[in-house]
Amino acid sequence: MSYMLPWSRVDHQHGEGNMIQLYRKGEWLTKKWVGYGAKAASSQYSNTITVLNDPPKYNNPGGYQHDQWVDGSQWQYINAGDPLLVGWSDSDAYTYTYGDATPLYNSQMDGAMSTAHVSRSLVWLKPDNWVVYDRVASKQPDRFKRFWLSFENEPKIEGTLTTATTKGGQSLFVRTLLPSGATLGVKSDHPMWDGGGKQTASGEPMQYRLMVEAPKQQDVRFLHVLQGADAGAQASAAVVVRGTSGAPYEGAVVAETAVLFPRDFGEPATTVGFETHSGVKRFVVTGVVPDKGYSVTVTDAGGKTKVTVQAEGAVKSDKGGVLSFDPAGKALALGPTAQGGAASLEAIKAAAAGLPAPGSYGTPEVPPAGTGTGTASSGPGTSTGGAVPPGSGPPRACGCGSTSAGGGVLSMTLSLGALATVLRRARRRKKQ
Image 1 (cartoon, rainbow, N blue to C red):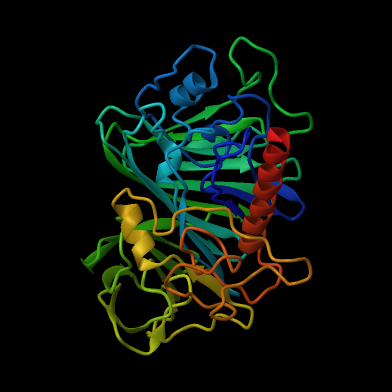
Image 2 (tube, one colour):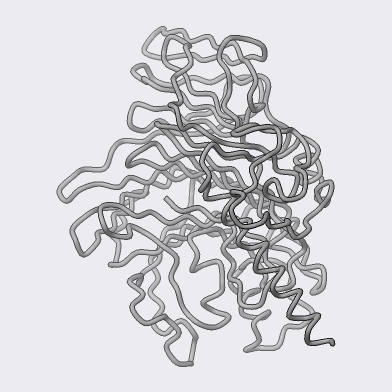
């Protein structure tokens, strides 16, 4: 699985905030549709969310701002700020990410500031199931909201189940569980640019896209379950689960696992209650306080399982803010290579209020060659709960540590920092 939540300040970066890509047995089940031009840079080609904003001030037909506004894309060059990696974790059984991309969808320079919120939570249940939860809200009632996935071959839609097949015969099953009343459709874009030349990159395998459009509501939740499978396999059942007490939660049961996400963006939850059908063998509750003990009660009655999670107890959340436990309410082992991290509470509060995070984005310092990737100073795999010292980890007050010297999130952040450093030096030389 590939997940991206990049800042966007460099020419020709695309609208890739909260993008996912899935690779299985030598083939892409879904990936970014790579191409050239402003159209190809739109978020609708990057397996993420689009949402219509206000028309930009610079709205000339054929211009990149016009094209990206019409598509509901994240803005190139001119967005309102950086995204926030709220939390991430990786263990033997699952990988989790939680990213707030709201600033990428707004542009202060262009006066397009009507997108209220866009965030994505994701749990990969290894090896073949993904549960994706998107929160999307606008300040105006008449703005479309769309979920996108790209495929190699034309997918088949049957009700809320979409089935795509690779050239090698593998399947990707996509179940749209939320929102109710969503419209599903398939689009093919050759050429990408209306009335122009072909914009798709040579050798790009993606040719079709699933578009799930929500009803015209200001505040919408998308919930999708994705399943990779061999040829001839059947799609697994998946059902919606909703919270019954404590913080509002929603999620799904798939592959004998219940995955729960906070319905609203904000501070980590301390109390959660929900019900599932009996037979669930694993529970994954996201969006709680990282590295904290919780008490968990699981009871069965009348074919239903009732779960209550409260602060203070023996079941400890991981470093990204995820609780994983069995039907007896006992914590499940994460494995020896488990790692993760989370943003500070101050950064989350600021993001929820639409404000820059404390110590907002600055180019991270790149450690000298041979000194590693610069994990958090509080120790490998530790969430600091505050801003990270320069050169010790990702920006935006994210205390993400790693037990692996090649941690993907850290190395990506440092690579971007190195690029920014080179660009600054080039500008200085040009001025001289």
